[in-house]
Length: 193
Ligand SMILES: Cc1cc2nc3c(=O)[nH]c(=O)nc-3n(C[C@H](O)[C@H](O)[C@H](O)COP(=O)(O)O)c2cc1C
Image (cartoon, rainbow, N blue to C red; front, side):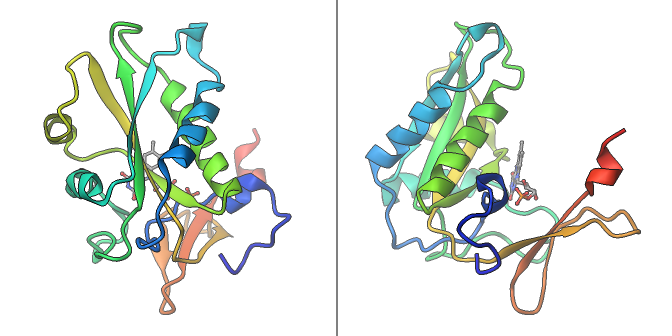
């Protein structure tokens, strides 16, 4: 992320990265530390219904990858090539025996995980898996757990920049000729009513 300096706020440095140095491992202990941050995050009625499945083993990662959808607005890009894929995943599931429906706990947990990853020089992307049922089966997850989100993690291998949404209102992210990923964000003026 050549565009950001070290004292930028963590939230600014924490972009969605989709290409990684796949050869750089993310250790199981790191994943456990990140889940520990999620564990301390807010939870509706303090029910804490979230559970986590960790994967940092290349063979297990290969099982997860085909069930994810990448950057829907980049129509010509099918997702990261072999060598640029995530080194790890944290799969957030809801324990239906603790709460029938999970409201937004998983979004908060995902952000805690990604901020912790950013602090550690890692990066990632929240993925709403395309083929939840298949992923459930492939990973042999018990039926009491509902897959909510997948967090892809690794050492980022791309530059992501933020820019203001233009007058045309287009919020679609895009990549330029130098392969820099641009993310339009609405301005403060446009969002404070
Ligand atoms: C709930 C949620 C689901 C998302 N699902 C996907 C996804 O399936 N695939 C993907 O490539 N990005 C996904 N994203 C990442 C968004 O595309 C990304 O947050 C957005 O483009 C803004 O970029 P930024 O995170 O760098 O601000 C998801 C983000 C959220 C919050």
